[in-house]
Length: 82
Image (tube, rainbow, N blue to C red):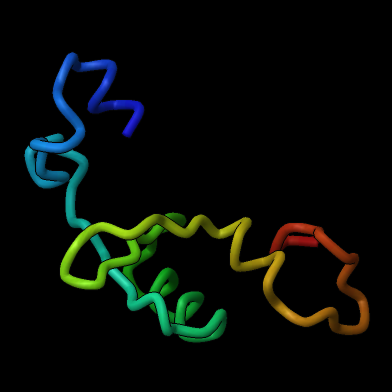
């Protein structure tokens, strides 16, 4: 979104593929945190677009980390490397 506005384009009419950012990887709004992490890992991306045949939002790695259940040795709200 920031790149669209910075380039003086209209966010409502600009396609993500036209921004030259590479492949756009999408997930379903119904995907759980483990599926999202798997998708991020397999595509080597840190941000995914949520798509229900239209853009509904984006998920970053930090968002997924916050949604995971706390496990021994993992600090609450810490990133995936902590």
